[in-house]
Image (tube, rainbow, N blue to C red; front, top):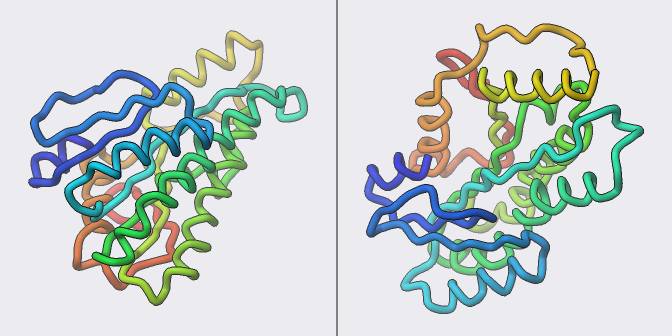
Length: 220
């Protein structure tokens, strides 16, 4: 995704807990090992004080699936980590970005999951927090209706590699999957990227407060 936006001519800033996955003169990386509110807010504030112009788009693609197992057996730490990364980090970042966006215009895309709409067995905290993230898009869109800012959520499908990782993890925990997952509905990576590009383009300024899923050849 980062490379696609760089190829389209954007200046891109990435925020993650790990090292930069991209090297480009138009890419700035902010490493924040702790995604809890105070450290993340401090890191962003220092960066934005030196930013040359407001950001035109924000894509929240952070996620964790910490806490794989029966939902009634998961620890408070697993729930807290999911809320911190999947939901609260988006709110923290938006608090810093929206003043500039409301003045200049912009687009927000929160990367949710089909797990927000459909329970994925043994991934309870992930599904619950992604559902919250999808509704967060609606709440922000409703309150920003008068501002030149759109806010939408995209339900990204698990691709084969991610499903394989969860299959192995569940086997390690002696957990059986509820059903075999097919690959027929998995969107091509390019389809997801095209959906992000469309939602952050001027042509999509009339679309806000929506949850959109990418499927083979179409968006719903």
